[in-house]
Length: 399
Image 1 (spheres, one colour):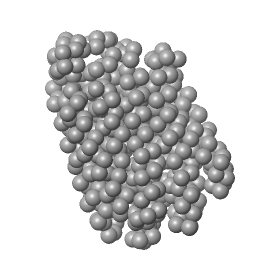
Image 2 (cartoon, one colour):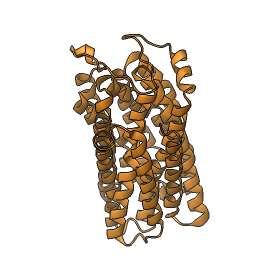
Image 3 (spheres, rainbow, N blue to C red):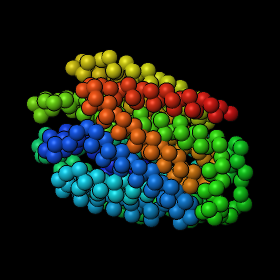
């Protein structure tokens, strides 16, 4: 079941992480500034975050199997529509709609994982799950580099996303929302600080949302996740812009340097998921703070390293990806501990809404700063500061 869900998510996020690779072509062919591109990317993240508020409770109510499948198919469709855009408005509208349907994936999927694994194994389960999502960045980066070497930027929105319906079909056929549907017993655990509801009892959507919104520690955790997400997505969207430079067509090898970032993200998710249970004894807050501080230091170092120092750049990009993506699975597992299984979809929906709203602001800030300073490496200053703020938030809710 976990392998089938991970297989789906391996392809799911190719429909959202490909935008950074199209930026250079969009800017040149359609004469858009970094600020305008920041608005396009940031608005899509806002739609993604708002969609999480809806898809989270719906995942709690109706299960994630159908929602994840439908979201993957619709995302493939909106990517194709985006590829025909000829200006600011014809890009921002379909790409924002793509963000809204992409929101049908993570919160319902996280609820599904929570249903199947208990407290002692949840870190490893979410680690494998987010490893697949992280490795989708490797797939997206590699496919985008190959597309740009032979075709135009519009095909970035057309070819890699054809894998999404394949993953959705596997997910729909093999995955079930609860262990009981396959004759297994549900894991029984009592998350710390959480009351366990009787088996089968469901909150109304209103009551569940109210309970989530009044959990102060969970709200602070969501803000910490927001800063973490700003750092992660800021790198995914703007690192290709930094390394490709103005002469990116004359130096295609520069694009392959950036592949170190998603490789580090994928391995960071897997290592953190395993390490949270094995070495931190499911104390996810300790891992989150440590990784975010190290991510901030790594990104700050990258600001001072010229991009033509490719050996050092590859190493630092790998470490930045490793440390910035590692805490993602721990934030999700932490949400399960603070809220309990029955509110997992609603809670993760809210956490993602905060996370992607923060990242949307970050995308716009990075674009404005780049235009104002003319320095593409300013992305590392903004993301380093965001990771440090995420560490401060997480430390403040220490048990």
